[in-house]
Image (tube, rainbow over all chains, first blue to last red; front, side, top):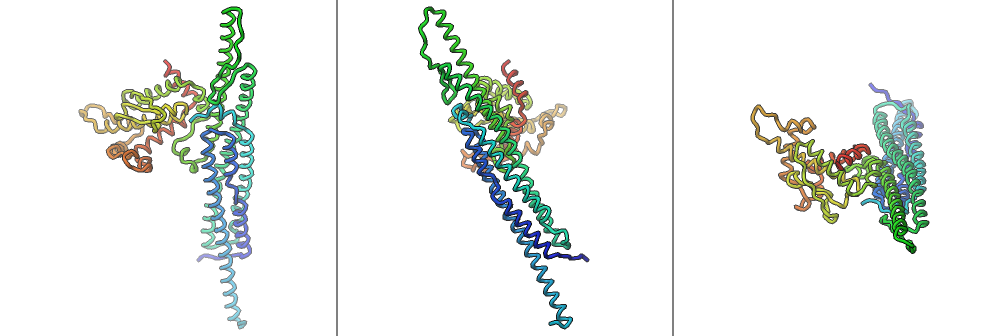
Length: 100
Length: 349
């Protein structure tokens, strides 16, 4: 028998923390910095490498931001579900006790 | 294609440092995001089955960002290292340009040093010869400085390429990067020295594979491919256009690996008396299995080539090419300055 214990506020805070982390990471793929570096070494073979790496890093960070936002949204949805079930159950008990 | 003097003259160290600083700012932001997710992304008070899935997702996200951060840190270090090398290069360029101007020489974009002075009139032949000798010495000293500059440029280029983390740039993943010291040394070598190294490598690798030393054919730059193993590995063709790039060390090892593949196939099928040693043993000692040799045999019977109408992917992914590419990459990345010196010494004997 497993025990379920949820603090809705804590879950809500976690969802905010995840979405905050996603927002903080957004735009830090570094492609611009690498392009800037590449511009200072014309003719080097690493110019192309820097450009490719920058594009790949930007995509990687963007994908991480999306996945972390989704994670935060799922946490928030789970918290909402728990709260809703709790309220319904509370309402049910209220009915049983003659409050309905 | 090697870096020209005209390119190197325009190199600037400061943007490399600025880019490194910018990466540092991005790293700080990403590390903060990672820490926030790791410490606050799943509440400790949450229990039950769902929390396990949430923890698994959070762990995966943290690991993904950790890997990204590690790669970014590696590139940040590479940019700072390259900044130092390029600062040295800038100083050398300023010095050599000043020296050339002061002594009435010009250095073209391809690095050729020319005497642009008006020759004075001399009272006798001896003084004219002496003047000419000094001018030639000065030109040679300037040409040596240009060579040093190109070496520094190659080292900076290889330093940055070496900072590229795996999984982002297919060329780097597939073919590898030369050590900066090797790249610098290669850039300062003459073509004759480079050929001597290549010839020595081929001779030594043929001996290791138990095959006669293949003949070497130098194809013109317009030929297209970097290299080719012909006649079952009895001839190695190489593109002259990549002689000035240490990448040719990869190509040589790649083509010699094809020669080894042919030999392993032959030795696997070789008839022998029961009391004779199995010629395949030497290949097994070097980690080649009979299954591999069989796979290569089948592959060569149905070799995929774009000139036969196959796609580049079919060519690229066939077993003999995957194996040769791995060998070429390893050879390039394992090459050291000392080994290059040794190959040059042996090759020049």
